[in-house]
Length: 324
Image (tube, rainbow, N blue to C red; front, side, top):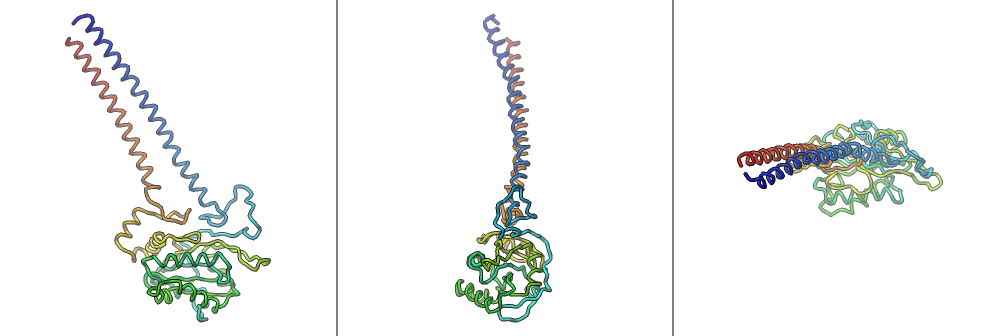
């Protein structure tokens, strides 16, 4: 081997050695940064989740203000506190839209029940809740009276069965003719006295307040799904209720005794989040951490593979140099 050839071989070996030495350092630094970011994800996710339930109107836990909220007096102590798995007072007595005395338990036993709390002379928000329910029923594959029952209860003890009957007629007529007969039998509008109303609203966690100056009630909006045994299973907030969410909530409340095989597949992909009152993709809560772990494993594997290849290259060049 000539002197020039030997110097070139030595130079190449030194470059490869430097690459071999620097590669682990670069990969290690990148790996550390990724680990640091991955470790921050759970805490960031926890902070996000914690903030979801901290609303004075919709909360999966008792409201705890972090700072003065500036809420009007009428809205203080108003909201919805989730009480999942709470037993409803099935022996509570009400009157239906025909003026007949009924027990809440008359609508339970075989099917899940969709509950709503409104008052029939409400000028705005209660009508929006009922509008949202009707919109949902228009596209929902399940039919009230068949797969589930619907019970709407006035929380104003001054209201009468006549008001309930008029309100029911209005909303049943919003639906297509082919759906009216079933919904007329499966959607029940009730009124009651203060004692039984209070038992029901406290069991649900529905807090409202009467404002004597306006002769109106301050209250939050939402609907609630209960099991056939009368236990609260799902809360859906606001005035619009996604048909998919309501359908999945009813299926789970019925212990999967209603619905199709496609619904069962959806329940593998979506899960109910109590903090938001919605069904979210499972990948967002469980598969992302798993994906992060898999990514770290791949990076570590690539790190060791690079080290092995660099070592093999160095050994090969050394062998060629010795042979020359």
